[in-house]
Image 1 (tube, helix red, strand yellow):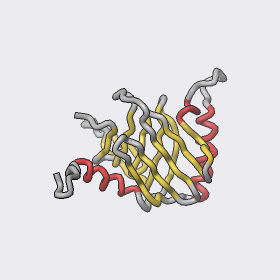
Image 2 (cartoon, helix red, strand yellow; image 1 turned 90 degrees about the horizontal axis):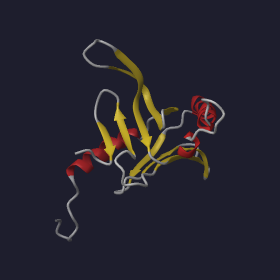
Image 3 (cartoon, one colour; image 1 turned 60 degrees about the horizontal axis):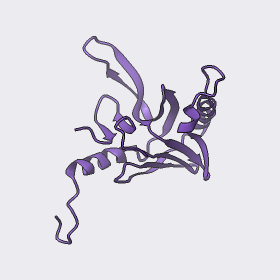
Length: 164
């Protein structure tokens, strides 16, 4: 306990918050889905090994994978969200795909930079960007399957809920 009766912050939480702050100033470069998960990519292109076989993958330096409710907001209106990943019965293409296509065009033209990253103790993650954009990741369940992950390609990562 600190002198004022407040619990001392967990060093791991401080390390994770510092890691998340690496996003500040980075450019949002991509949005897509992988199965039922929303993915947003930030930063320049990097390569990393895919195991011992010598294979290499290439992508953005940072990524957020959301396997829980999330939304992308611009000017106070939801533009794209996790409910858009629900199949509508019209084939393999989802409403999410159409929104992501349009959003990728916007990202290529405007290159919005991350202004701030906030994380609440219950797991909410808020990424605020230029052009009145915001990405909210909102875990609403106690299920371990409902999570998000922040990845530094080829390096550290933050997972919510934490893995023991």
